[in-house]
Image 1 (cartoon, rainbow, N blue to C red):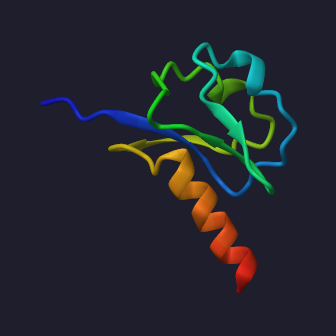
Image 2 (cartoon, helix red, strand yellow; image 1 turned 180 degrees about the vertical axis):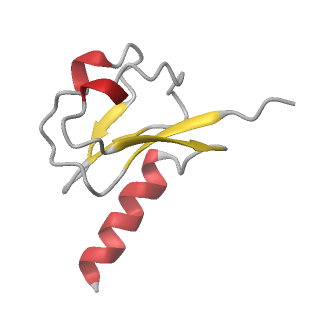
Length: 80
């Protein structure tokens, strides 16, 4: 059984927006401090990976948190 590889954008993201035009499904969304990949719509093309100047986009086994969960996580961190 092949495991699905999900792409995620880490906290190293500088919001330079180099990845935005590379995503054929429009799955990269803007958060307050960084961009996120909507795992519900991402087709895992990986086109965004090589254009990131700070290597903030990585592959990881399984499905990443959906964008709503990541945005909620970001908001909780701000409240602390």
